[in-house]
Length: 297
Image 1 (cartoon, rainbow, N blue to C red):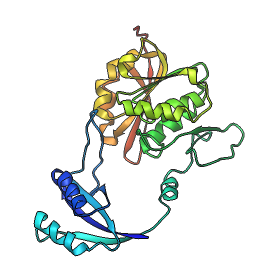
Image 2: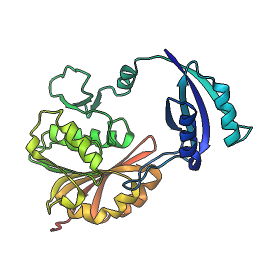
Image 3: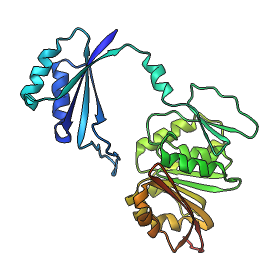
Image 4: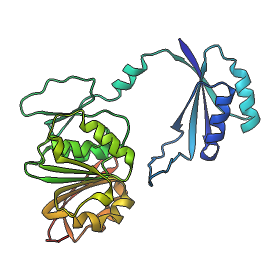
C-alpha cells in the first residue's frame, strides 16, 4: 500500500487551523517539520513550541482526489500557494524507526542500546538499555554525548551523582550503570520522571540506589558529581542551587547551550568554581568545573 502526501509551509500561527482543516478534508495523519534551520526547545513546562515557519505533511489515501484539497487550501492560504505532492511507499515503519536509534559507545566502554538490539560486550565494556521515546536524551544529541563521554571515563565507585534535568534518565542511569553509589534523577516534568522510571526498569543495576524526584523533593545532600544538560537560561538561574549541592572538590558538568552562550553560562559559576575544561562539538558546548570551596547546606 502507498499514500499521497501533501507538503505545505505555513507560519506558526496558522498551524493548528490548517492541520485541523486538512484532517476535516480527509487527511489520515499530520506531521510537522521545521521549514528552515531553527533550533526548537521547550523552555518552560507545559509549552508546545513551534517553528516560525513549519512544514505540514498531510497523508491521504492513495486514491484520494487531491486537486480538491489543493483548491481548498488555495482558498484559505491564497492562490499562490506553494505545495508539493509525494507518493509515500509502504514500509516497515517499526523497523525504520528502530534504525534511527542504533547502539552507541561512549568513552570507549559504555554502550547505550535500545531494547531490541542485542550486543556482544568486550572486556571492561558495560551495557545500558534505553528505550528512545518519551523524554529528551537518547545520546544522539551533541550535548548528551559530551556528558556521556566524560561520565564514561570517570571512576564512579562510592560516588553520589545528581542528574538535574534528567529527561529520559540517560545520564542518571549511565552513572548507576558505571557503579555510582547513589544517583538522584531530578526533573520538573512528570513525563521525564516516568520515562526515567521506565528506562530504569529495563536495566539490572541496584535499583534502590536510584531516586527519581521533582526538584522540590531533592534533600540537602552533597554530590560528588552534578550533571545538568539543560539550556543556557535555566543553567544561569540554577547556579546558586547547583553549587550549593556540590561536594568539596566535586565536579559539575554543564551542557545544553550553544558555543556563543559559553561565556554567559561560565560567568554564572566562576570564580566560585574552577573551570577544568570546555568542549565544543558541532556548535554545542559543555563546561567541566570543580568545586574549590567548602559550602554547607
